[in-house]
Image 1 (cartoon, rainbow, N blue to C red):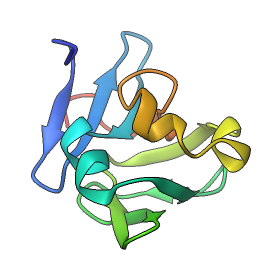
Image 2: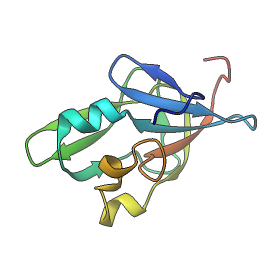
Image 3: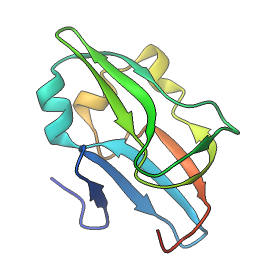
Image 4: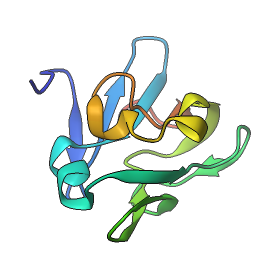
Length: 110
């Protein structure tokens, strides 16, 4: 089931913006389905700046690797550390436990 509170970019990443000026980023169900079984997720470091529309990480599966683009600009404030040991969460729950990182937005209107 696809949550109604998400916004998307054409490269199949989603963002959920919170009222506190932060945003959670992940990949869509379609993207994880196209990748197949995810074996590695690379995300930016906490404190790094990501720019909307630019590469911010990588998702690797048994059959391919795909760049992950940031849908928003801001400072990374948290990463989903559980993906280091359990990257399959991206396949199992891409809109929930499979989120990638959280950002303090530079511009909430973006």
